[in-house]
Each structure stands twice: as C-alpha cells, then as structure tokens.
Image (cartoon, rainbow, N blue to C red; front, side):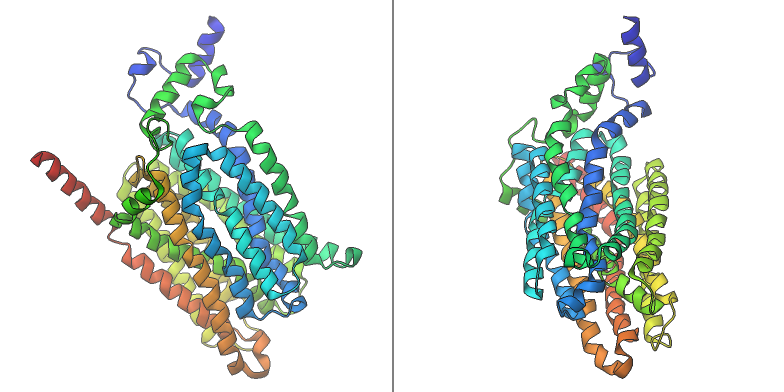
Length: 490
C-alpha cells in the first residue's frame, strides 16, 4: 500500500479529490513518462524519414553527372515526390481511424525504406522520377499519422511540446544527412565498382525497414490499449484517461468515423483550413528549396572543395535548428495566449521572408559572377532555420484550432495541400535556373544570377502567403462570435 502511494505521488502532487472528479490540467510529472514511452520510436522514424527524403540533395553532387540530369529535370524529379505525397495523405489518415495508426505507420515505414533502397538502382531521369513518385506514396502516411497519434496520446496542455520535441527530428535528420551522407558518399565511392550516391541511397533505406517491423511490438494506438500503462497506479491512469476523454472522438473511440468524402468536404468548407493551407504551402516552398538546391549553391559558392566539406558546412544551420527549435517551442508553450503564439510564429516567418528576399537579391545584384560570395547562400539558410523553428508553433496552433471528429482529416488536408508548395518551389528554382543560365555565358556553372531569380520568386511567394494569412486570428474570432450569436438565438 505504501509502495502504491509513493508511485501515485510521483504522478499527482495532490490526492485530496478523486481523480474522476478532477477538472484541472494534468501536472507536469505526467509529461516525461508519456514522452519516453511514445516519442522515441516515431522520433527515430522521422529522423530516418528526413534522411531518406533529403539525401537526394547531396546525392545530386554525383548523380546529376552520372544520369545526365539538368537542374530543371533534377528539380522535377525531386518535386514529383510531393505530388504522390499529397495525394495519399488524407486517405491514409482516414484509414488510421479505422484500423489504428500503428499498423499504418509500420506499413509506411517498411514501404518507404524498401523504395528508398531501391532508388540506388535507377539508371535515368525517368526511372528516378518513378522511384520518387513511389517514395511519396509510401511516406504519405507517416507524418500526418504521427501527428494524429500524438493527438490520441497527449492531452491539450502537453500536445504543443510533444509536437515540438517530435519536430526536432527534422534538424537531427538534417545534421546526419548533411554531414554523415557527404562523408558516407565520399568514403564508399567506387567500392565494388558502385558510385557513392548509390551506396548512400541503399544504406540509408535499409534501417527504416527494420524499424518499421519493430513499431507494432513497442507501440499502441491509444492509452487504453497500452499494456505498460496498466502498471501505472490506478489513480494516475484514470486521471490520464479522463484528460484524454474529450479527444477520444477524434481518435475514433466514442463514435463511428465519418465517411472520407464527408470529412474532406466539411474541412474544405471551413475558411480557417485555407488559411493554414496557404501558410503551410509557403513554408514547404522555402524548406524544400533549401533541401534540394542549397547544397549545390553552396558547392558553387565554395569552389573546388570536397563534397564532405559541403556536408559539414550544412550542419551549421541544422545544429541551429536543434538548439533553437525547442527554445522557441517552450516560449510558445509558456504563453497560454493564442495571439502571442501567433505573433511569435509570424515574427519568425517575417524574418525568413526578409532574409530570403535579401539573399536572392544579393545573388542577382553584384554578387552573382565568378566565384561569388557565400553571404547570399548564408542568408537563404537563415530563412530555412527561421521557418523550421516556426513549424512546431504552426502545428500547435492547428491542434488548438481544429478539434472533434474531423480534426484528423483536417490535419491531413492541410499537410497534403500545403505540400503542393514542396512541389512548386524546387520546380520553379530548377526551371528558372535553366532559363537564365545561357545569360551567364562561359561562367554559367558559377553564376549566382540563375539561382537568384528562382529563389526570389520563392521568397516573394512566401512573403505573400505570410501577408495573406494575417487575418486568421480575426477570422477565428468572427467565427466564434457567429457561433455564440446562433447559440443565443436558439
């Protein structure tokens, strides 16, 4: 009895009232145990997801010459991923409500690991495009499925931080991709008569398959299904389940899931959905241009340097993300005021827009000939860091805005439509690069102008998206006011 009381006190500072009657938020002592049980596997899966998704940028340092790819064709090959990635997200997240997110996540990881490893065997631009399309299909269920899983496991007072810690996997994956992938590609180049980029794609795809097979063994769809949660003191367990009870409808526990088309139509009719889609589309334009084109831009800026050095230099912005993202997320989490969280997110996005516009303008004006300065590329990398730090705040605000039985589908709708920007951004940069290239004459391979115009278009689009979503808070207030008026009238 004494032992049970000691365990209970570690979760609940006070036991003066029965847990089922408590309406107060869960104490902080609940957060760490949930994180240690729920986050590690999906966090590691997201690290591998970023590796498999972004290693193409470094592989391009060898691949483009081997497959005779132009920047435009390579941009299309990289961007086609986001077409299939967006097409399947909504059906996959809807499937999570019917069979559970764990099965969907496991199948996704095994599929994308297999496709990523098989990409090492491509022989031409069309074959690369086909594999990238299949990779998008395989990965489409993972990210929205993970966010849906976090909604089922973490009550609202913990959900923002859970998403923020999960999102740090993007930066860790970026460090491993930029530093490790460059070294791996250079070390294995020519081994067994195989080019380094082929080794890179194969070896970074295999671990994902192994982790996907392990997911059902260590994770559960929701707290009620978790065996390890039964070892918690009964009072602590019931208090957690009570805190999650209002969100169980979104996880398919208390009602039958609505039909897919009905759920999609209901979300698309909500104007707030389009605010989030517009902003997220601009974010993905910036992030994916950084992933696919900045390694090549940095290589041209540095001149004749090893690919491994390019990768090591790209770890600097990745480390900045790892350090700054949790700090920014904690600032947002401490603020219970939604307008303050919105202001913090917008400040980051305006910083990103300004640095990207200035960096691209610097490429066009005066710094775009010969062995050009590294400063414009650094400014574009700064915009990448600022946008990435705003991602946890973005999804935290989304989860606070959309609740109920349509919340999971809305999450997938925003992610799917927003990722169209991930297709448009690299395609624009590659297309403009090829069109402006002839104007550079003999110095075309070291001409920053052909990169600058494409990045300028991306920066201007992101700036417009940030400006056009400034009324999202006002619209929400108007919606709430309208609902109150209708309620009073009834």
